[in-house]
Image (cartoon, one colour):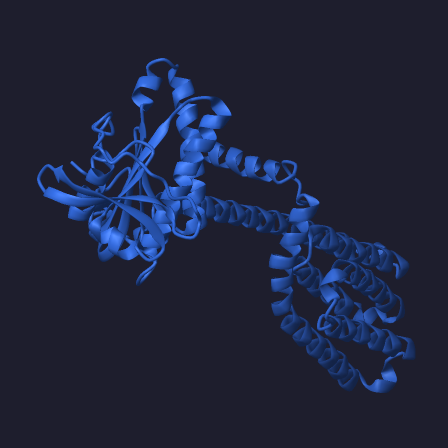
Length: 458
């Protein structure tokens, strides 16, 4: 059963790539990539083999001439040997041309057909006593062609030309009447069949391995994109590198980051009058727009909790500037809510709180990984939001000190925060030069203050 399932999965991979069950050709675009990445790489190492073959062939002809005596060799045989050597040498050095790979299959096919003609010519001109040399040369050529790093079709042409040359050459010299001819023919037929089968299986295996590698690369890229969408880049890299399954926490302390909490005011009441699908679609539209703002400004989205949104700036940005990033994001989030109200007629407001300080950030546990923040700064940012004013951005004293030069900040006085005491708060109305300053009511508004259910601020 397991073997059957593996075969089915292999055929499915080939089918998706445009191959038939026994086909060895991919879709045109994949076939070109396969040739560039696999066959061309193999051909670079094949050059050395071709050089060795040229030297060996030339040496064989020279030794044969010395042993037999140059005068004993027919001039026609010498011409054939010279042409054969020239073809091999030319085919070898053509591989160093810059554009060889574009015409490699065509050149290889022409060379292999020429080799077939050379084999036939040697059968024609060589004496009967030395025909066994041609038989040995033919078998060696078959083995070389079967191992060539070319597509199956090219190797099939080469083996076919040898088969025709061998058969016609034997018939032409009358070897067919020899009692050993049938055994020789069977040996040659078996060698050609094995060569073709080897070429076919090797070609198919190469393409199948290439397709598996492509699928693996696509799956790896997809998983990396998915992990990067959940975790900041450096945390996702550390998580991938962590080989142990011991559940070791991947956390870092950051001495200065800016944290933003946002909550949709009145959303709970609106959700009771809409279907669950409509509510989820509404949240998806708004939070997708918030995500786009975060991507544009380089802010890290941490998570959404119900109708609340948590983001942080400064995890990867060293030094000052993360406070400004988050202030800009808050202003754009407020503008998104105003645009959405005009588009749909749903009067939703957003309440935003921002604070900066030290946090511990990372991933804990061994399943359903989720990046999160911990620390007093996270709690205070959450309180800035929950004790804020609908439609406004409330910031802490630490944020006011960082933003005062560039943004309009309206003092709100001290607000009582459970567990912390009375804390100064300020309303961020806009950039100083933008003319976007607002004049919110500074009276604390507790409406819908506790509807978010934030685990980070618990």
